[in-house]
Length: 106
Image (tube, rainbow, N blue to C red; front, side, top):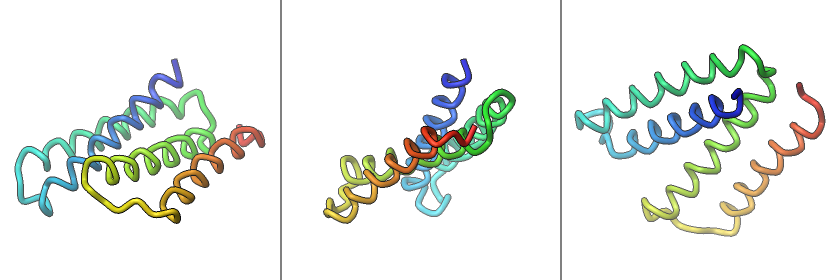
């Protein structure tokens, strides 16, 4: 169940960050509301996750997965450029999360 709440936290954070892109500096109502709600839900679910998962593990997964997802969304949906450096960076973020988890940061 802890991974379900963590996945929900990641999804909510990614939704909130994506909506922030479309809020035009918080000048558009609906994207701004979605941003706020997304972050509230993300932090609430992350707080629940931290009841039974080590903070280092949870945050590494949350931050790494969120970063990789937002970078991919930027490339696929927002039209951001695809560069070798960007792809390598995404791979390194994911690899870092895997190494931290295999290294026993529990």
